[in-house]
Length: 452
Image (cartoon, rainbow, N blue to C red; front, side, top):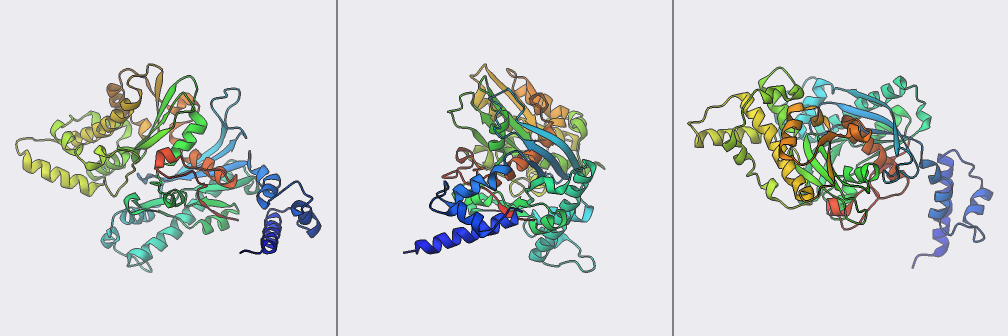
């Protein structure tokens, strides 16, 4: 049996360290006052709630995101109200104070893309002093990613004239290079120690694996934020995030009903890859190239036969399932079976756009097809794809498809803000996952903290 006295000593020492680390008076008398039997605080947790954690409620946070499309790194400086809820419309639940986005350095992006594919680094040609094995490349990229993220944060702080000491924490998702929920793991590449050291701000990272430790998929995590910011008692809202992968969040009007959220299939991941392979552009601006093509119906049906689309939720996916190599294999099989059908690269882009639109809208219609009091809001880079938005509207004829701009948040910044919110949840000791979404057996506090 554990000695109660040793527990008391541990609590006393831990509180002393934490108070000292946060610049508070940690004299023995003060700590004894907090933890003595005559105190109002029965436990260390109670003491912390009344000292350190109370100031984590409404301070400044930075959220960082680089998605599966690998089009760049976003950073958002935010401030949240203590009682964040869109059900109470008396005040805005958060303030987006400043943003900054920067493209990846070409070599880092090349390495990250290679790491996203099993044994993909075998195609890299190492330069002087560069690694020559997958594990060494992982370490190299973790450090390079963190140095780059630190530059992005420091630029954001400089441009917004923000003192680093006023920022409570950075929520940095890192770069997913392998997501294997069926195997119980997900790897996000980043060295949070470097970011904390270079910026002087505490960093929360590794958000997904705690959810997986309790049986969850580790994704999607943003629905909890969607619920906090966008839920409304007057109507059911569906949030569709069009990043590299598309995912939905269903926010029921009745707050007693469970939020539903999961990945629906590929989005910008395939669209960008196909565009980059056939044009001089990294992405199909506005969907103009896709709109110039014609949807190849037999190819669309073949792509929709991918097993992921038939899976029941909770479910999540990534580059492991949908990538350029997979698409090329599908096209080769299609040509062999349909030698009489000719098509152009633009036709394939149109078909990929339709794949995203129909796979997402089919899932959305499962939840709102019988509800007249529902709305659909789109976020992520795909919200800027006019042709994709047009195709979504065609498959959702009874609802107006709008971007989250109509809810007060620019669609391209939703995910970065979400990880600022998740960082706040972690520092507050609050859960960040939704078990009904990820499949976890309970709600847990997500992420690991690297104190500055």
